[in-house]
Image (cartoon, rainbow, N blue to C red; front, top):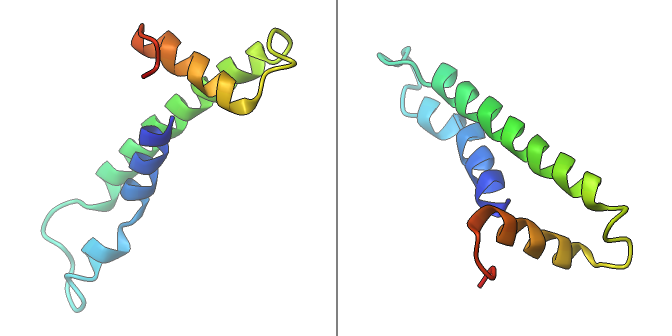
Length: 81
């Protein structure tokens, strides 16, 4: 989940790239591709949150950290380590 969030943050930082062209328009598309990445990451994060919420009744006594570890195990097919 953290890599998805970091990717979303990185994609949302268009100001650094746009500042390279202070007095002119860039010659390539910068914002559109970033928006597409952001939309994909938001959809992926939404899926993770939906899965976590669906597990809440099952794991009412578990901590959030244990839920995230279960998600990692589910996604990676390993022990999460």
